[in-house]
Length: 211
Length: 253
Ligand code: HEM
Ligand code: SF4
Ligand code: FES
Image 1 (cartoon, chains in turn orange, purple):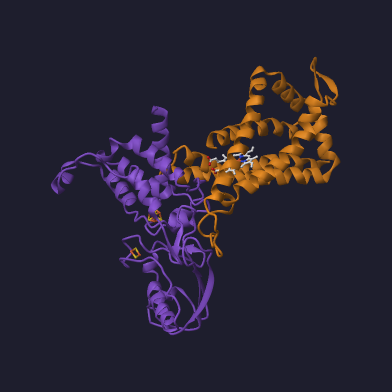
Image 2 (cartoon, rainbow over the protein chains, first blue to last red):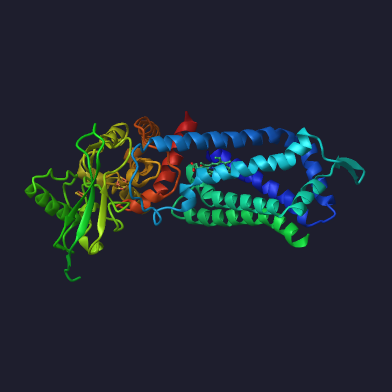
């Protein structure tokens, strides 16, 4: 769980870095080049299936864990008062994860599917290299519909909440915590979660405001 | 704190004949309870009342009634060991409650802690976990030998903190996953910090974790609820220590 979690979090950093290029260059050249670099890079070719496996393993473990934990308490409590004892995110990781899955399915249909399976994205020349016009694919979606923008923002927020618990939890799981490090990791985790949520939200927000 | 008398309390309590029957809640009214009464004394008074009415008294676990043995339990108003922090149920007093209040009392709920009767649950599973590794098999000598082995202050303190676990099971009861990680981690990190325990550290971590899983406790997802409800304030940094010890042992294999 924690290994896949760490892996997915490192993926998020790369993914967000590339995405942020969307808002720094309205001509789209920068983003297209970055996207092209990502698809033509042999490392990414290897990482792509690994990423898919990472997601699938994370989801399978999450499912097994959640079912086991439900089985471990066949008769529940009538009255539970846990607000002061643990955070909402930590108690609802599976709910948050499932919301992320719904987001992911639509997200993959929006972009990956059109690029790789349907091959319906136009090719353009940038600096003498032929590549997919990923910028137009993404920006036209965000320019076209407010609903999509809000959907992406919601996805980013759910992911952020998942990580407010997930980040520190992953460190605790591998035993990297102690009286001193625990507080540090919790703080870094909250900041990381916030930056991820903010970073991914800024892109649709930018398109709402600018276009 | 001056004494007050509480009236019109309603005690909503889980009644269950034995492990085979289903059980249900019953609500009993009780009056004239001093705020200086302990929670278990209140239940004693209620039981006198029930006996006089010709009803079965409520069965609940208790022994020392001074917060050291770990026998008392009870999930009171949605919290293990009741609304007060860092104490066992036997140390809880009625001053934490108000007139006219309905007080809900449930047994620890976990597959591995089956109900024996009413509020009493079977915590043999904890003994089984201890038997699988919560000991040292070296001869540690007599009492004076204890002082002959120098142990650093921080390690001694951390080991003592972990050793203060009384095995009450509140951590399992409060955990949304019914996980016994806090209990197991207290034992493992207590012994792993001391030279007498280090010899068997790897074997202990592996076999206690395996036993805990085998007995049907849930998996820890680091919600941290256990350390909040633990009457002895055992910290979940012990769980990080257990995870470290466990990983170390597995990698060494
Ligand atoms: C980019 C997406 C995701 C990232 C970065 C991520 C990250 C994490 C991290 C770091 C943890 C903590 C691991 C640990 O405690 O050892 C975690 C836990 C969890 N994740 Fe995810 N996750 C993602 C997507 C999902 C999805 C799609 C699901 C599907 C159901 C999911 C379900 C869970 C559950 C149930 C837990 C709790 C398990 C536990 O704490 O032991 N996550 N996640
Ligand atoms: S860790 Fe705390 S809550 Fe769990 S059994 Fe020990 S004393 Fe009780
Ligand atoms: S009865 Fe011994 S700790 Fe409560």
